[in-house]
Image (cartoon, rainbow, N blue to C red; front, top):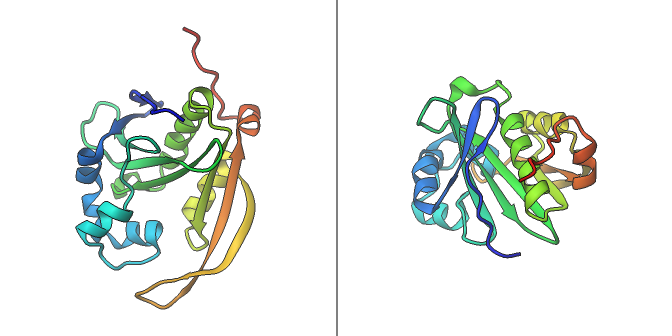
Length: 192
C-alpha cells in the first residue's frame, strides 16, 4: 500500500489531528509513567524508558503506522491519541488511550474509533480492522462490543505482568468492511 495522506478528521465533539513522530512523542511522553495507561497498552505498570518508548511505543511510522491526536473542538490540547497500524492483508489494528481522566467514561473511544473506521474503510483500501485487548480491560472490551466488533477468540495465558506476576489472557476482536457498512456507525463518504 502506498503512503497515505490523511488530513484532520472531525467527529461531533472532536478533531482527530494526524501527528508526526515528534508531536506524538510530546502527546504520549507522559504515558511512559502513567500506570493506568501502561497497564492498558503494555500490561505492566513499570515505567518505560525513552528508548523503549521510541522502539515499542504507540508512535507513527511513515508508511504503516499513523497517530491521531484526539482534541475536543474549541480546544488546543489533546486528551488522548488513537493509533492505526496497517498490518496484514488489507487489515488495520487500532490502539487508543485517553490520558485526560475528565473524559473517561464519556464515549471518547467509541466516537473517535468510529470516525477512523469510517475513513479507513471508505478511503484506504482496508477490508478488516482488528484489536487485541487484555481480558481485564473492561472498558476496551465494552468499546469494541459497542462498535459491533465480533469476538473471534481468546489467547489464554498469553503474557505475564512483569511487576505483579499476574498471568494475562488476550481477547481478539475484528470487524470487516461489509459488516461495518451495515452497522449503525457507518457514514458514507462525501462525494467530490
